[in-house]
Image 1 (spheres, one colour):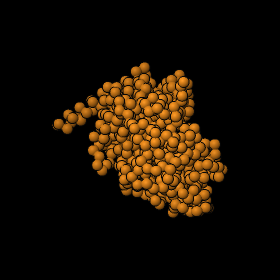
Image 2 (cartoon, helix red, strand yellow):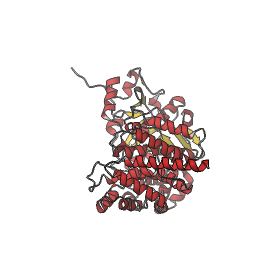
Image 3 (spheres, rainbow, N blue to C red):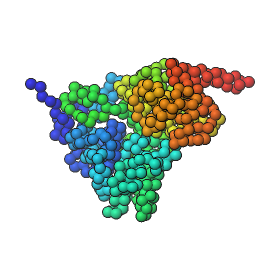
Image 4 (cartoon, rainbow, N blue to C red):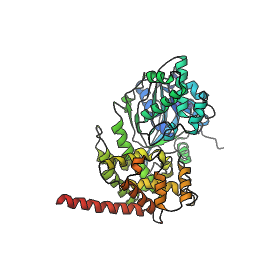
Length: 511
């Protein structure tokens, strides 16, 4: 008779197979001290793991209350397992399993902000971390300002006691803290946004200023918004991942998380009160996160966005497939070395060329099945920091942006080909998908007209950048080739042009 495997939970911890690591502390004694918004795969592979490491080294009241204000719901996965889950580290044929115990409670707050506000306003909570994706901040990508026209922000300003946006919920939680106990709070963004602490503070403070009653001033005196750089590749979990835990270890886990071996966390030293000593377990506390942000976002993330959109256009499913493609591999390495690296500031303890090779090596990991469509999600929120900022810096240097312009055109082509006019070749998820589709449907297949209309979207493309002749010409040319029957022609052509320019520079320097 077949019996269902036991589900992971506290009672199973002592009976786990020897090949599965377990929490190295008394989890029953762990009390909540921080909350996390957005309990997805990345949080479970990153901040929760760092916290688990810290609790094993230096036990303290730093249990995590996990909160989701957007799907998926947590009750039937993490909630059913009392916050326990299996973190798998995978690298090619190697697998390492570990049960993480730092999440002590989970809260579903998708239908109402009430449950989230109860946690966030509690005096027991000294720190709030978040991974709510770039679009969760309701900001304008080109400026970092709060988007006052965003439907959720319009709703929350009219209904501040029943908010549904991240800025609205956090501002209301701070207002409740001010009114009840006055305890300070550190709000730490762990999203992949340059100057994420500055953007978080901007959207919260702007919202609070609209509320009035001295709330913005209280927040300025009692809240801190440090910036942070986070890094670990953690793709969306598949059914195969869930099934593999049952097959290998004999128990059911509905909240498995899968990641690569590499991890990094750099945090600005800007706290409102007590802070977990994550620096004791591998994180780095620094005065300025900016050099680390630029390096990671422009090199690793720039490579990911480039390989994802161009990979989809080339018919490749995963990042590992794209980086294994000889043409794309040569292109992305040359783009990073020749055009991206010259825009970076020095990073303590980091050699830029070695970082490029390390990053591309990580993307080759065949055990991390990171779908190109997943990486391309919300590309409009990512290309400013990953591609447009280094392009702007290159233009300021009077240097070529021929290679960096190709993935910008790749993002355009990815959304354009999801339009009715181009046969809806694939489903996309991007806040600007509808706008780009409308442009494509109205414009047709005229690449110069398409490029001009998309470059006119000022919330993505700064008008000064969009008006630059060299940038416009490079993007327009690449877009025309990407929308042709041979999309990789743009990649080949840009490499050929770059080679000609290099030979010309070499001859000039020899004279």
